[in-house]
Image (cartoon, rainbow, N blue to C red; front, top):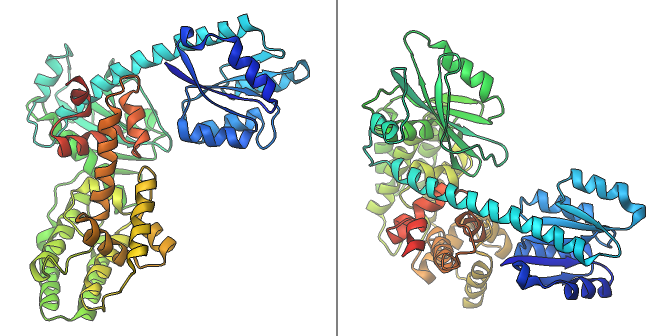
Length: 484
C-alpha cells in the first residue's frame, strides 16, 4: 500500500476527498490529514508519505511552498495539487516545480481516481527499478570489499564485457547533490576510452576506466574534463591491468577521494603509495615518552606539531589514519580500561572521514582525550545522565554529534563521551549505531519499504556505508538478511 496525506484548510474538503475514493482498492492508505501548510510539513517530515494531495492556497505554507520544502528535504513524496480556476497559472508553475498533477475544484472523483492510478503505475515502476538497483549494489558491495581478490578480467568476462585497451583505473567522484547515474552502464569507446559507471554512495559515482596509458595518456584527462566537470572532488586510483584485483583499484580511488579531508583545496587527487608513518614515528615516540612521564603540556605541543606536519605533507587519509591509530594505541597502553571512559577507538580511513571535518578537529579531539587524564572528574547528577540518554533514544535517527549534546546539556564533549561509556558500556557511536541497526533489522521485515528508504529512515544516507556496518554487525548484507 502506498501512503497518502490530504492537506486543505477547509476540513469539509478533506473529508470529501477522503470519502469519495476507495483507497485500498486502488492500493493506497490515508495516513493523515492537515489543515495548514506547516502542520502538513511536520507530518510529511515524520511519516514521509508517498503521496500528498494539497490545496494550493493554505495558511502557513501554500501548496508551492510545501512542494519546495519537500524538494529541499530531498523527500520522495509525490504531490497532487488542488486549485481553483483563478489559480490556473499558479498550478502550471507548480507542475514546473515537480508536482505530479493538479486538479480543479470541486474535485471530480473520476479525475482524482485517474490521477491516482497513473501515480500508482509510476510508483510501482520506481519500486522495480529500486529493487534492481539494490541487487546490483549488494553485488558491488561484496566485490569491492578490501579482502576480495576478484581479478578485473574475471569481473568483466562474467558480464560479457570486452575491453580493447591494456590499462585500467578507478575514478571516484563526489557530487554536491544526490546523483543517480545508470549503475553498471557500459559505454562505447570515446577518444580512446571505454568505461563502466557505478553508483557507489549517496552522492558518489565511480567509473572503471579502460584506456592505453602508454599510447594515449591524455585521454584520461580529456575524459575528466569532458565528463566529470560537475564533480565536487575526484579520486583516481593507480594503474591496473587485467590481472589486478578490482577491489584494489576501487579502494585506491576511494582513499584518494577521501583524502580531500587532508587537502580540501584540491579537486582532483591521485592515489600515491607512500609511507609517512615511519618518517613520523620519531614524533610518536616522543609523545609516548611524554605520556609515560605524565607531561600533558608536552603531549599537547607534540600533537600540535604532528597536526601541522600532516597538513604540510598533504598526507593521504590512509596514512593519517595509521598515525591516528598509533596514538590510540598509546591511550590503551598507558591508561587502564577504567580510565578510558572516553570515546576514542581504532578507525579505518572511511570512519575517520565521516566522523571528523578536518585534520585540526581530529587532533583537537586527541588533545582533549589526553588532557582528561590529568583533570579532575566532574560529577553529574543521575537525572542529567538519564535525560541525555533519553534524548539520544528519542533522536538517534538524526545527525546528532557529541558537540551538539555538549552544548545542549552544558557538559564538555569529553565528559559526555565518558558518561555514555560508563552508563551504557558503549561509546556514543557504538550506542547510536546499535539503535539504528536494530531498527533497520525490524524495518527490513516490511517488504513494501526499499532498502534505500530504510537506510534514510534509520539515519543514514549512504547505501554503501550502511551495507558495510550492517554486514559487520550482523554478518550478512541487508539484502540477504531480507531474504532469510
